[in-house]
Image (cartoon, one colour):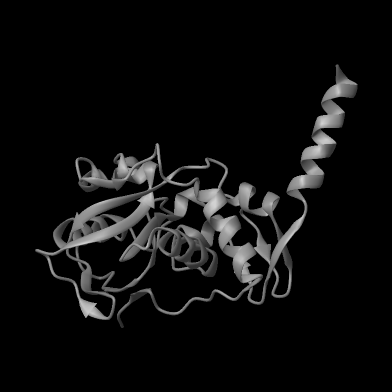
Length: 215
């Protein structure tokens, strides 16, 4: 039995260890980074989800990024790296989210900003400014989607994972929202990120002020 298992493990290691692309910038997936502030790897994952679905914006939780490592600039990336970073292999879903529900989600995600919280939001397609000195629930100063101020009455296409869509990490405002793409027909988040890197061959995500505290 061990010989058979070892043979299959060797085959999987060979398949998952193949290079899918390269990062030109450092990717920091340490828990202390992805659960407290914007990160390049969080931006990479959110960008991949938004690009794959054509959504207006994307939002994921820092707690879903689990590699707890640093990839140096110039390092080759493999499928195994992505599977290590996203071990739960959630599905990408698209929600019909009102501006109000998005604002509520961001307030929740930033309610304990500065502490290591799995709820911390990593986004694509939006720019968020918040004031950590304000009381939780009133911290978001501004939100722009597609370069325009958030319209609380408008409905946006939001790409996220099925865990958050079901209210995980306290994102209860997403429960009950119409699912334009659900977990049964949405792509696996790992495949989405792997395909994104393969298509680009070289990625260079960086921290660019998508979610930033005001001074």
